[in-house]
Picture 1 (cartoon, rainbow, N blue to C red):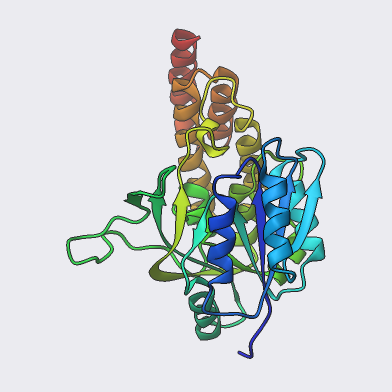
Picture 2 (picture 1 turned 135 degrees about the vertical axis):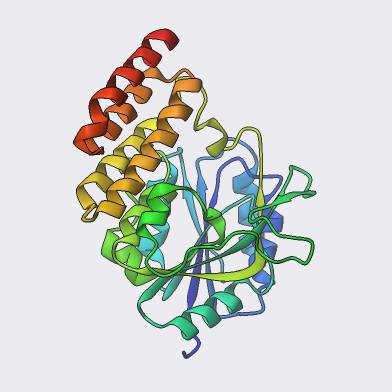
Length: 306
């Protein structure tokens, strides 16, 4: 593989405390053929001024300053439309890339070939102050993975369970173009991207910690299972997409597994409308013999909880 241009789309919303370190992690990449696009999504804090200062010191950085928050999916698509890279990284303004992230990603793409459209890695979780509080994949005392990380055709794996740390992804732009970017009707992007891209491309894993993901109490993901969550609607819409995409028994089984997980999460967080929606989706995709008894059980549980 020649030296392709890699575009990093860095989305910022109220990240005044973190955006300088995030951008520094991009500038310090060992692979240097980069295009950096920073999008401020209508931050009411001091993020815009900080970004302008960073860009004045690094003229190659492109800025998109939005007057209001238009949602992550739509904001990312604006950056995607301006991007010229063959590969894309979607990075939040509070997360960090370690120096070899892009170099290792390109190495993996070169080794695996054109049919692989997404590369992902292990990550460290850090707190507000940058202290390490965990690691994405569990490892033994020698640092070896305790579980196998799916690779290749991973659609069913992506549908059944969460196993990818989102900011570790590096994507071929051709895959994003084929999908038409992120779905702007959704509150968040990763699950939908996994489902739609999992049907058209393969995934490869680099077994190294190459990203630091910051865990904050007020982050978008932290509100997914709070009562009256507005994110569960997006999760349900993606599951309906998967229902239409599914072609095999194993894919239907994966959807049932996901539906059970989301039903339980919605039920115990008090989101009874979506508990009902996910239970209906589950019942609709079960084999006929299991439907009636499960239907009765779920409805009795819902009556007790509501």
